Every structure is written in structure tokens, then in C-alpha cells.
Image 1 (spheres, rainbow, N blue to C red):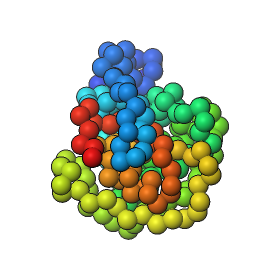
Image 2: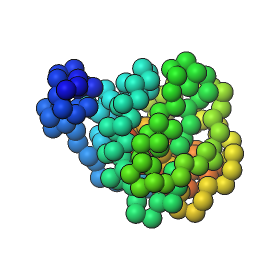
Image 3: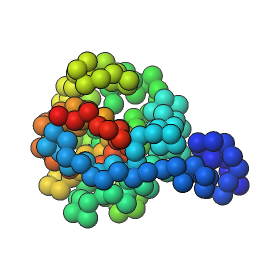
Image 4: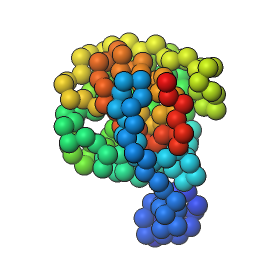
Length: 186
């Protein structure tokens, strides 16, 4: 027996049946020229799981989210390219969510993780802000991603972070753990 990551009820898996029934999977969507397949809608249980990973470094949340993301991975994927978190935020919270998610996603198909994008030291947090007040991060290229690579990120809301990562890397496909039910895409 273990405790449900979302509601703390005793259960056989990391998420109890009641919480699992609240998870919803959205259809793929095009965002700033990037085809994005998200594992879940960013609400209730899914939102809690992302927050556990991002702000409390509870990597078992990545196990749950990553397994769902793996089912959304395009069959043509050759490698996974995590969209990195700002370095100071990674230091503060002790985790880079995209890297943890990529580690879980690759377990199913056995794909390589390619660190092709470098994070800036810092950029303003986007959490809770609208599209007009968000500025995309300025990434740097670390290496060229193999053809067929897929960007990996935790949440897509406006798509500005994925657009910046796509522009730099040339990749046009992404998977995310969650996305806003009503995205603020261009």
C-alpha cells in the first residue's frame, strides 16, 4: 500500500482510482508552429502533480506524468529534448521538471535524452500571469538535436516558452505533462 500523491488516500498505485478518474487528456494542438501533445489538462489532480514536481521536487509525480506522456509520444520520435528550467529556479527547487519528465518518458520507448538547449540563469516566473505580461526565455543552443527529436516540457499555457525552444532548436513537435484547458496561444 502507498499513499495517493494527490489526496493522500491509501491505495495500490501512486494515484488512487478516484483521483485517476479526474484526469482528462486533451487533443493535440498547434501552438506557435509547434504540434503539442499534452498528457493531461492542467486542472485538479494533474495540476497538483505538476506542482509537487516543480515546487517540492517530488519526482514520483514525474513517474505518473511521464507514463501518461509516453503514451502521447509520436511513433516517429528519435530523441527527447527537455526544455530547461532557469538555473536559479532549478537550484532553488532542486529539480528541473522537464528533465525528470524526459527520464520517465524515455523509459518506455528507450529514447536518448539530448540536452540541446541551455537555460538562462533566470527569467521571470510565468505562473499565474497572462500572455501580455509573459516574456519568452532566451535559451542558448548547446548542440544540434537529432532529426525527429521531440521537445519535452511540464506545462504549456501560452506557448511562448515552447515557441522560443522551437525557434532555437528547429524542432516542431513537443509533449508536455499538462496544458491549460483553454490555452492562451497565438
